[in-house]
Image 1 (cartoon, rainbow, N blue to C red):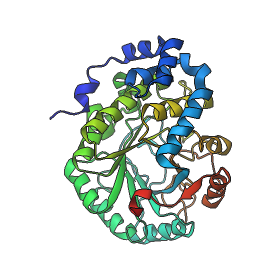
Image 2 (image 1 turned 90 degrees about the vertical axis):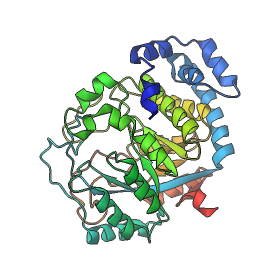
Image 3 (image 1 turned 180 degrees about the vertical axis):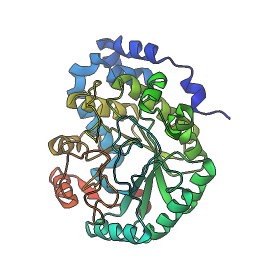
Length: 369
């Protein structure tokens, strides 16, 4: 069966990296005036040559986003159901080799968490778990959906890769979107970061969005963990992935997230650092390349920087996030997956969005139509 693997294998990491680094000012200027931008244009826009043009890219990004999405920012809350995990991932606080207190929420605890999240006004929730197939599996997810669905009009999932028939079950049960990050598209280095567990299977993870697309899910979210490898090369492969998926599963919507490595239990800061200015460049490049794409910014980022991104192409933001199971009410002290930076309440974030001239939307606008 044809999948993204066939496309991916036609590219070489080193050749892509050289191609991006060799883009010229002329390539950037051509990309800026193009009416439809190609993957080569995207390379130019994320290249070092584009850095003097970030202001121009930001203005274009602002205009294009407003034209497609209006002056709205969608708000959601992540809810961690479990930190149990069978994978060793060298950058993650939930990694199997960390001796931390493991917790999976019971039905009563899920309802307790929902109660607190609902009080803030959220109608869009993202359910997150570690990857532990013996305790957080499709049956657990179906029970959780049954509990959660009456309270939220929009449910998204960020859990371990599943089989196509399991995604079909989730879709029928009312799940709106699935987020799955490749972490890095650098195949050789991928195994250094994921030495143990099912996650160490690079191609199984790579083909997950294909299984989600075939299952008819409304929306698929992609991203790389910025800081594991060269961010420009990694995000080119992510853009290539989105481009392929949009052509093949054209009825599905797509979002991209930009998680930068944050401090977590036992994790070194990144050697492939991406600066704030480079992240702005990257977000604007995505918007110029793809006007339909939803762009999501998490509470990993500092407040002032998040505020700055509201007008630059962002369509979705988390607020008041807790990255530990039970973090809203049940077990506030349990270990986080990573440290958050923007610790403002959802109400404070919504007020900043409104003060920027935008409307905070507490549920997905599609459901209104």
